[in-house]
Structure formats: structure tokens, C-alpha cells
Image (cartoon, rainbow, N blue to C red; front, side):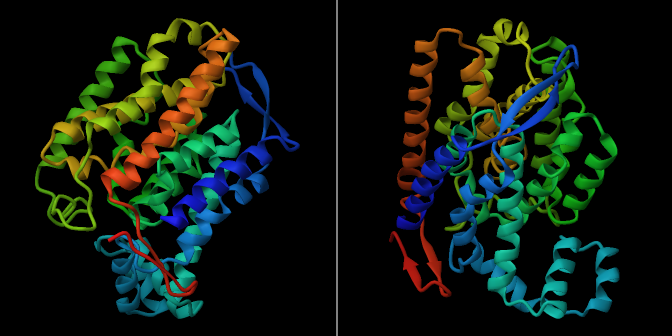
Length: 379
């Protein structure tokens, strides 16, 4: 666990330092009037520094959760550069992922160490870009990223999180309803992990007015429909095998997780009149709806026999909570002392969640790196 504590402490401290450094000015449209609004944002360079340690250790891992499966997959991958066009046109599980592996092995002569570092660097860059672009409280958003243990997706679930990050690259286009770049990104991500298709069920509804009957009904129907699909025949898809319990899979969605991920949705609902009366960036309304989707999927995952499968889907939307929670605390509450108290409670609650996830739910997280000479096991 010392590696993950190092990541937690480093990210928390550096994000505060970076957040208090000089910032750049960005312009976003206002949600209702679409007038231009100016904001101060942390630079991308500052974001890369903040997430450096999480990226560094992700790139140097070997026997961590399902990483050994990816190592075996990489080492056993055969084919040449000339095979890539055929692979991309095939109906294999992850044609683009396979093509990238072949390119790295044959053209770049990468070992699995270098391949892991390439993927981790892409994921770290994407997360840093997303948070620095949209967060008004970079340090709080960064703290949530490590306290919710979202960073561990870089260590476990590499292929799915790569698909998540591909979509994150075009989130600004998505928020602006530029559908073609967004759908192209979803298509590319689908060639890496088919679960990204979950976006198709919600990408239009998320642009409707939050908490309206129309929006809530559409999201509810989409959650139920997708859950029924998941509960059907999963053989041959990326969902197959997720519910086979073993030491490398979790037990699905628990009540505590549902409560934690319900916080932004609950605040937004209770304070909706205050929120909708204020000027706000256009993407806040969309993020509120995506937060509702997260809650819906988590509730279904908690009560469903396919909980492990469904529990892996909210990651496509939950990173928006890292932007939404800090914004809600700063804008949904007018009393300064009340705002300060809620922020302190939030920091404490997410710290407790970090302890719960790492120690109580998972009994401590292992880390092993041959290149760094680190072997830390909890059991």
C-alpha cells in the first residue's frame, strides 16, 4: 500500500501547489444564454505534473491485479505490420488494441514495460487534460480522482480505461453537441472495449434539462434497457466472464459505493433552484445528467445478478463527478461558512472512502514492479 499512499499524498499536495500557481484564461459558453464566460484554469503542464506519480507507477507495474493477463496477452501476440489491416477488419474482441500491440512489438520493438508506460502516459495525459480543462477547483478534483481510487483503473482494467480515455479526448466536442467527432471517438474506443457502447444509450438525453420528467424518464428507460441487454447472452462480448468471481474481480456494487456516487446528484437535486438561477458553464447541466446515469447504473448493479458487469460501466461517466462536486459546493451554497464546512466534510468523507476501498473492501492493494525492484503484497 505504500506505493498507493505515495500517489495519494503526492497528488494531493502537488495539486494544491499547482492550483495556487499562475493560471491561464479559458472561455466557455453560459448554459442558458450561451454568452461567453471567462474562467481561470490550471495549465495542462501543471496537470501532467500532478498525475505524474500515478502514471509513473502504472507504467512500471507487472503483477498488479489483472496486469499479468495483459503481459501474457502482449507476449503471446503474433503477427506483423502487414497483418494490421486484416486485424482491423476482423471480428476479434479488440481489433484496434491488437493492432496497437503488433505495432509496438514489431515496429517500435517495445517490451511490455514500454507498452505499459505508453498506455499509462496516454491515460495520465487524458485525465490531466480533462480535469485542467473543466475543473474550477483543480486541487479538489485531483483529490477526488485519487480518493475515489479512480486512478487504480490505470492498474486494473487497462483496456476499458483506455476506451474511457479515448472518449474523454472529445468531451469538449460532446458538450458542444459536435456529434461527428464524438461518434468517431466512440467507434474507435469500441474497437478496444465494446462496453463503450453504453454511451449510445445516453449521449442525447444528457443534453436535456436536468431532473425534468422527460430527462428522468429517458435515462431510466435507457438504464433498464441496457441492464436487460447485459443480463442476456454475453458470450463472446467484453462482458463475458466479468461475473466469474476470482481473486482478480470485485464483488460488484455495494451500498457504500452507491451512497458516495449519489452525492453530486443529491446535491444538484436539492439545490436545483439555486443552480438553475445562476450563470454556469454549459457543461454543468450535462454533467448533472451524467451523474444521474451513474447513480442509476450503480443502483441496478447493486441489486442485479450481473453486478460485477454493470458495476464497471459508470466509469464512462463518473469522472464528470470530479468536476461537478467541487463546482456544486462552490455554487449551490451561498453562505461562506456553510460552504467551508461542507468542503471539509467532503474531504473527510472521500478520505474515509479511500480507506474503505483499499483496506476494508480489498484488504490492501498489492504492487509489484520488476523494473523498479518493488514487491509489496498485503497477504
